[in-house]
Image 1 (cartoon, rainbow, N blue to C red):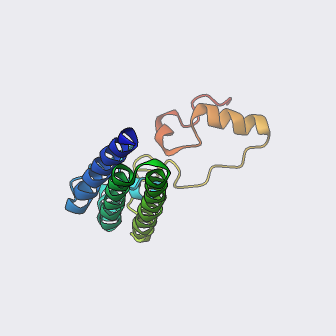
Image 2: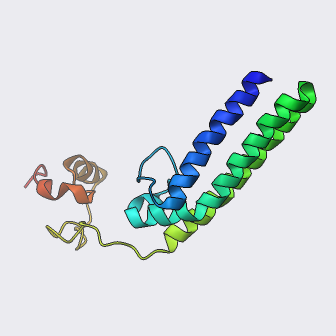
Image 3: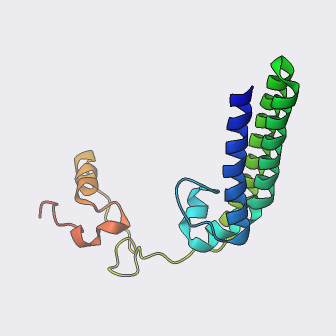
Length: 159
């Protein structure tokens, strides 16, 4: 039981730390902690907004984990294990709910203008349709299928 309670306490500290940083707007945009969806990672503002919205539920999830750890220590045995498992499931559901709210808020933000199509006209006008599957594959290999490939546009296609 001591190991289970210790794990719950450590996870609660990590989740609580992420929650506090998110609420304060100090959680940097990253791929490991916080609400991480395509919408939230699109801009710094959307990441901050999503994590501020999810912060209270993450704090609640951390509290549930602490309660599960205390329950495991105090009750012990099968009952303590059951309390810990219920607390973990409740914490996951609570954190998931907050993450969902944050993700929806980030998705509702206006889209930021990207460099795609603005700097070198890459992607701003549709390319002529490729004739064969080999042409489509060649365009993908050449880098014509993404915005980061403006410099390669058409460089490796046959004339």
